[in-house]
Length: 160
Length: 394
Image 1: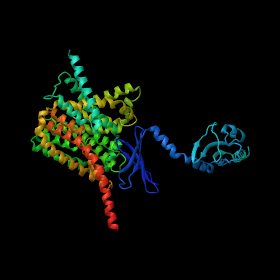
Image 2: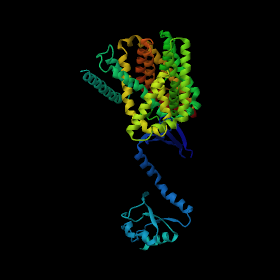
Image 3: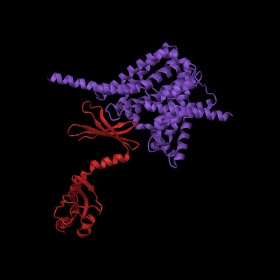
Image 4: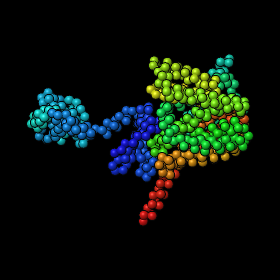
């Protein structure tokens, strides 16, 4: 993927690239902090099919939404980078005693030393869940810690 | 009694401009032509002649030109300017010659004399960067791939004006050919020195005015701008160019802050400038120049289309984008009025102001309309090309 940068004098900067499937998209960053999301037309590659104006906050929310699934990818990479650090996505089965309980009830951190960094439910990611976060069966609980800590967490979530 | 009259008339004018500006927003056009019309309606020979605020309007319109150019300069860093010059210089030269020479020829034909012809060159050469940038943003074209070429031309035109305005001011102020040559040379030398100062020691100047509360920044930047503009005017480099160069040298860390603080002031004083140009133009002088103005409009539309076509083709843009680039460049505006204002103040043929007013009025309204029109046309063109390709494939 080639990210192209173009200066727009008096306006700001434009970044754009072509996706693997051939759509061209881009973002204009104005000096005032606003962002414009650009979707190029397929018929006329020089023109934009859609332009969405975003203020600073909106752009941040969009970036977060687009970036979230990558949290887990990055964690996987992190495991390779830092020796001794283990990451695992543990599925919560129907039989688990923690179905319907909260993250606080499980007290994973104080009992195993491992931390729950995210929860994946129906493909949606809840990053850094609060202690009040309820578990339901089928959740994927993303845990980071030592090998033993992660193993102990899996054990704990299965059998209590 | 005088104060009361001044406040009432001035208040009415500014409030009226606000209403007119709102109307322009509704119609989706630039307010510049409407400000001109408002000025024409109230000035000498207009519906209601204004007398009380004349002195204030004159001073405010001078400040308006300084503010317009100062903020324009703030838009660009020296790096932007030089980078564009290196990449697009041939297009910039083509743009200025192709669009300026017909204006100059008209000036000679109408008997404005060589100095008037020089002024007409500038009036027809430059697009309005304000209107063009607004049209591009309104039509959602900032992301289009022809847009950097369009913006690049605007930058070069602004830079071209930085050279042209001092020449024009020097020629306007001089009496004979030799004197004119001398003052042009002095003006250009001053310009070169100022550019080097802006490029080299811009950060020093910035440091000089940055720091402290918003209020003191505003006062220092505005004060410095007026000072520099005044000194430049004394040296016959033109106040506008002084302000533009100051803007360029301030265009780094300070620029967003200064821009934010000065923008409302620019809007106010620039509006006064346009209305005051309209005020000083007698509406009855318009009909005689209407025909030449319209011919000039047709020529000007065609030459800008050619400029845009060439610039976009150089950037590897397809036919629809080339047309869009040309159409976007059509509007003339603030610079043309600035030049006409300078020329009339120096005593060039009074018809020149009327011709410039009529020309800008038509162009500033026609430009955005044509730019909008380019979109459906481009879509139809692309569809036709695809159908043609489909039939040949079969």
